[in-house]
Image (cartoon, rainbow, N blue to C red):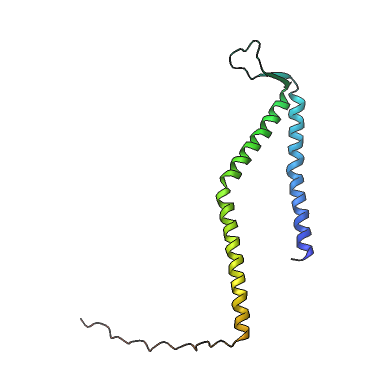
Length: 134
């Protein structure tokens, strides 16, 4: 591949990324500014008035942390689920390497000794059948 298409694709990728990331950043900043209230997250299901474990933080921070945790859990689940395909790809890569080595061996052997290739045989003449009589 030449340099021109690669740099054009890279520039296009940067433009598309900017068109997506800039509005996303604006939305996230607007969300953070609009939701600065402090919230308390209780991790104690039995005592809601004085929880044993609780966290106090701004609402936007809570939402962003939960989104990050969701992305990590989703990515991990996807990665674990695709393990079978990665294993198959590694096996096929090994087989491909072995087959290429075998092909190179056969090519070297064919270059050293002449190979008798049979000449193509012409197919026999086709039968000519008459149409059925009624």
